Each structure stands twice: as C-alpha cells, then as structure tokens.
Amino acid sequence: MEQTKPLDSLSKLFADCAELERAAILLADIAGRGPDALDRCERARRYVDEARRVLEPGSVLAFEEPATSPEARPNVLSGWVKSLTKKRERTERAHSAPKLEAPSKEHVLAIQGNSGSIPLFQLLSFLGTLQETGTVKVTAPSEIFSLELKQGVVVHAQSNNAPRNAMLGNILVEMGAVDRAKLEEALGNSHGGRLGETLERGALVNTDDLKRAVERQIQMLFDRLFHAQDAEFAFWKGEPRYSDGRIHLNVMQLLLESARSADERRNEKEKANAAEAFLSESA
Image: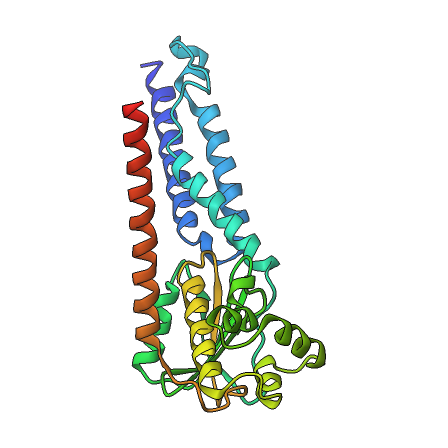
C-alpha cells in the first residue's frame, strides 16, 4: 500500500506529460502559419523533453529500475521536429525574399500563397481556365517572375534574372534573325529601352521573327517556372500594363510543353545513368 500512492501520482504525471505531447503536436500542425507559431512549437518541444527526463521511471530512485541514457530512449517527437525545422527554414527564406508589390494602385489582390500549399502549375492552369485578367508575380529563390494575363491568355512575361540563353537578343541570334555585331550595336544605342522596340525601329529584325523569339522566351520562362521550388506568389486583378497586343499564348499549352520538356530531360538522364552503370559493370 505504501507504493500505491507514488504509483498513482506517477501515472497522473505521465498522463499530464502525454497531454503536453499532444498539445505540442497540435501546435506543429499550425507551424506553417508564421514565426510565432514556430517559436511556440519549439517551447512546447522543450517542455515535453524536460518532462520526459523528470518523469522517466529510471530517474525515480524508489523503483530501482535501471536508468536508460537519454541517447538510448526513442524520441517520438523527432519526426515532427525535423519537419518543423524545414518549415522554419522555408519561412525564413520567404521573409528574406523581396516583397511582392502590386503592379499598380488599380490592381486588386485576389490570391496570395506559396508553392508548398498550391503548386504553381495548378495556380496558372486555374487562372487560365477561369479566363482571368491580371498579373501574376512569383518570387523564387533565384528569380522573380511576372506574367500578365488577358482573359486567361498570357500576353506578356518577364523575369529579373533570366539565364543568358533565355535573353531575347541571344534567342534572336540563335534563330539567325539578327547578327551578333548588329545586336551589340543596338544594345549600346537602346539607352535602357526595350530591345525588341529598338531592333524594330532600326529595321534590324522583322516583326514575325521578333514575335517568334518572344514566344520562345516566354516558353523558356515557363520551363523555369515549372521547376521553381519554395516560391511565393500573388495574383492581382487588373488590366495588363506592358502588353503590346501581339502575344497571345495559351496557359495550358505552355504548361504541357514544359511538362513534356521535363519528361524528355528526365528520360535522357535516366538513359545516361543506365549506360554509365552498364559500362561500369562491364569494366
């Protein structure tokens, strides 16, 4: 009978510890809502770990059970703690990324989120299906994208950090639509203006070639956007500001082409890996 009270008391303490653990796990479910939630989860985890150390039977001398080292005890919270750390890193990256600003005072914010909750291809196909008119901005770790839609069709697209092969001038040179030397001269005389307009004014490129080059540039932009990770996005309703009325590209066709290109690259990589593995086994 002397040991009944300590046992009952300890059972109650373990029940309290279990409640703490459940509360901590519930907090983990809302960890994606911001830094404050992440801090609460961290504090809850520390409370639970401390309670476990205090309430372990091995630490109560009256029971004379062999104590186990903290390293040997399984930590049931380790899984969600790792997940919590990843969410914290994503949140910190999002807060350090440039803020998405409205295209103009007339534009109205309609959707905002991140690629972890809504994949970008789903967002774009959704806007295309609804035939929305407005501007989509996407902040990825290495690039900021801006797309203008008119009744669900892409009428303009640009980014702030396109690779060299995706720049309009290089695309035109690759197509054979303009000479490299003339392009460099036009760039020197553009004075910060739009390259396409400068080339057209100087009669250095014809309208059809320029249109095809811009369409290819937008497809390449979609290819990069298709693979963007940890991206923040926003969509504002409002009329396009930079479209000249010549570009009209179907969102779904752009996305399908990006998916096809991604499959081709993946298949080529798998074939190359298989060939390398075969050669290694044969050697």
